[in-house]
Length: 503
Image (cartoon, rainbow, N blue to C red; front, side, top):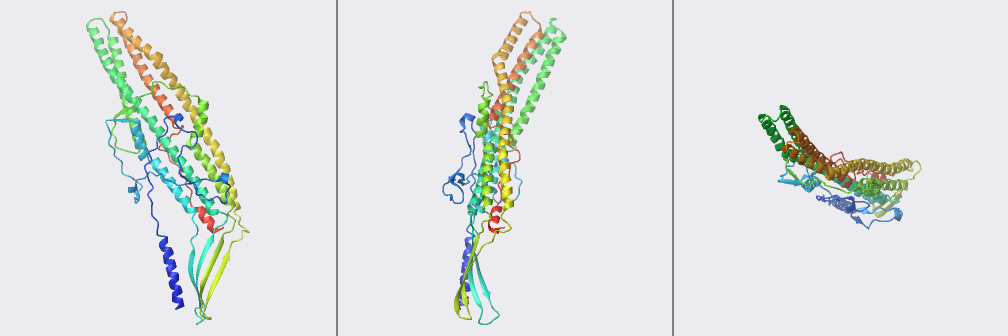
């Protein structure tokens, strides 16, 4: 009877423990993250641009206070809950209604919700958060039953036991700290990717907007060139002109037609690039709503260089990797501290018809394996991460130097064309037409003045486009590559296995 009661008690304990493991739910913490980068560096605070939710409940054991990392609760993800059970990696094209006119904000809104690189990094960040939670979990207790001397009648012993491994040295908390830094770094990478997408969207938008503006200018000039051919022919009929005038007017008309065709090709290509960056498809070209810059202020590139570096999420992510490497070094330093395994059992001895209790405690002895290899590797990783911060800093400075060249060059061109070249070209055309009507100059001179005015306008639009694109890169911390492969530095849960293997 005692044996039956003992076995029944063991079964109840096992069933209860097993049921408790099934009380998990997949929490859909996805939320469409409508992140909007700052309009300019003046609108952003110096420091980390990532907004993190931090808990103050992290234990402080095993790690100095000045080196503690706040425990982060990840709350941002950008996947559709309807895709939760999907097994295919291919997605059907997303079709969007195209309004009569689309602004830069419209394209940015679409890209934040649909760009695959942003969604990819959001899922990678969730993956890192899952690993962080996993490596801090305690070992499950072992509940078992043991029977001895079953073949020896009336001397058999039956014992129910519970065994638990206790982790020492704060290994589980240190595990969480290492992976928590990985989550922080992934959040920074996510912000950097949003800036990359935003910068690419802005650059491509202004490229398309400039092409649209050129199409408008050329279309307006087409009527002038058509009228020029008619005037040249009428002059021949009146005996005042020559065939040279007609040929020159025809050549000018053909060149304008070609420029219109090329501008339309450029607009179509830029539109397709915009659609690709938004992550959508089947969007027919429509009118773009926006203005090209007429003038901008000169920038202090020395001051801006330090501001961009310190505010860049790319640089912040590299610094967080150093913190992660430091936490990993601390973690491997306590690996050799042995865990303690405790076992307690109670049962009955039929030979004496009395109860019995067993107690057992044990720990591995770190004689041969003191985790020296992992400690050496962690030290090297810390050095490598520190050097990577320097590399990224110099990379940002080098990219900013190239952008500063483009910005200053375009700013000089916009200023010169707007204040001097275009007014002079317009006045020259006006005087040439007046002189022609007064019979003081030839028709060819009028064609030359028209072509100069036409080319100056197109060059002005090109300079405006380059200035807007360079300014967009500065505002985006010189981060580009909105569709490049994204890094997966989410880590894994191997620290937990290392914790309990003690080897």
